[in-house]
Amino acid sequence: MNYLIIGSGGREHAICWKLAQSEKAENIYCIPGNYGISLEKKCYIHKLSDMDFESEKSMKELFDFIEEKKIDLTIVGPEKPLVKGVVDEFQKRGLKIFGPDKYASQLEGSKEFAKKFMNKFQVRTADYVSFDKYNEALDYLKSLNSYPVVIKADGLAAGKGVFICRDFSQALVALDECMKKSKFGKAGDRILVEKYLDGVEMSILAVTDGKKMIPFVSSKDHKKLLDGDKGPNTGGMGVISPNPVMNEAIYDDFMKNCLLPTLNGIQTMEMNYKGILFFGLMIKEEKCYVLEYNVRMGDPETQSLLPLLKTDLVEIFEKTLGDDLDSLSIDWLNEFSTTVVMASGGYPDEYEKGFEISFDESNADKSTKIFFSGVSKSGDGKMVTDGGRVLSVTSIDKNKLNSIKKSYERINNIKFKGAFFRKDIGINTEE
Ligand code: AMP
Ligand code: GLY
Image (cartoon, rainbow, N blue to C red):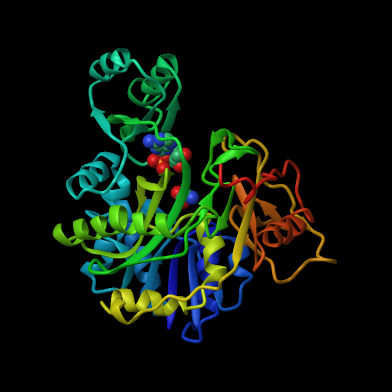
């Protein structure tokens, strides 16, 4: 079988790497991929001249490639093509693709859509109000007598459209960025003002065919840039799986108040959803609240989870698309997995690219794995930085501290100008 992965990050590298381990996989193509992916066995990267996944030209190029390479199944990494309706286009042509359609992708594409869905189907979440008029939002924020509140742009904003506002002046900045300065374009034309929840965050990915939903092992992303959860939000600076706070009571609560009501909603609304649903959770006094849905695998959660997966990934994709999740059991190694992300200096704001990445592999523990994100090959064949999050290292071990230690030992031997990583991934995660 030939597979196509859409996307270019560490998540896509991890998917390609895991698929390559399957005996069923002959060739794995990644559009556009990154240089690191092209170094994996069976894996090839390919660039389209138009990567918008919407225009006629872009879709024609994509479908020509699929025909030429005899692709059997496509897996979509990032949210943008899903929200634009890439799955609908494939299904119209009778092509197999793993991911929700355009309608169902609104669970990530519109925070208001997701909130209405959660309220309708009694999925536990924070209370909110939404506004599409600046003055009404302003009056509401002035009238509040308790802060913090969370202000969120309704649409996709690459993880940057969420503001934790400690007082009215911070709320005003957020409101202006969304609705006056249009920092997120149309995505900020509507905002949600949400109750602030204090607790421990958890990510749970689940696979669904629209009738059944099977959760993966839990994980903990570290979204803030700096140690001790300080600094701005990022796409994710590191992950530990399973999430160290997970216990039976939390799992039961998650199933009862988050996963099962969500599945009921997907079924009741007859959503065309064959893919991954990601629950971004806040855990407060052993109660789970859904902060957000993502309609795809997380990055860097995927880099942490897939090394723990014992089941053939091909089987998960095929049984989902074949409406056969009843016969799927997903098995995991009973170990910890720690992923540490190495980023360019300046990320998540402006950063320079093109710095050579050097590896001292003399003492490298080969049981650890490097997943590449923002890397490319320079004219003279060297690996150079080409993005904000450049690479990540994952290590697994039965002992949590060893899995953390091994990732840091490996990443300490990787260097490039301005390289930055958090030093506390997996540590103090119970707070
Ligand atoms: P989201 O994109 O909605 O997951 O929000 C990004 C991040 O903002 C989350 O990972 C949390 O750290 C934080 N966040 C979002 N909503 C809330 C909330 N209601 N209370 C506290 N923190 C939140
Ligand atoms: N790690 C969170 C995300 O993928 O959005």
